Structure formats: C-alpha cells, structure tokens
Length: 44
Image 1 (cartoon, rainbow, N blue to C red):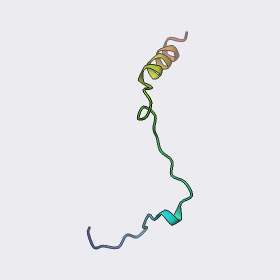
Image 2: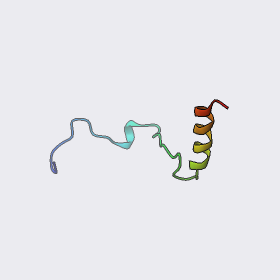
Image 3: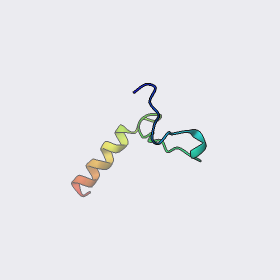
Image 4: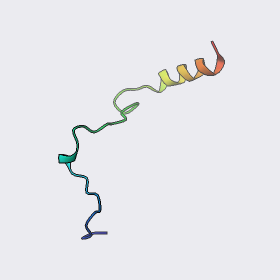
C-alpha cells in the first residue's frame, strides 16, 4: 500500500492525548493479578 493516500490519516494534530495500556509493561503486576483472580474465583 505504499504510495496510496489514506482515507483517514492519523496525525498528531488531531489528538489531545493517546491512551496506553501499560499494565504489566512498566510494573510487575502478574503476582497481584493472580492473587486477585484467585480471590475472586474462590469467593474468599
């Protein structure tokens, strides 16, 4: 698709902010998630 014009170009001037899902990327959250899921599924 090189050289083709996009129907809806994404450019920085159209956005005030960009959401990022950083769960587990910058912080180690796997242990916390495992504890929470276990708690939810065992009703304790």
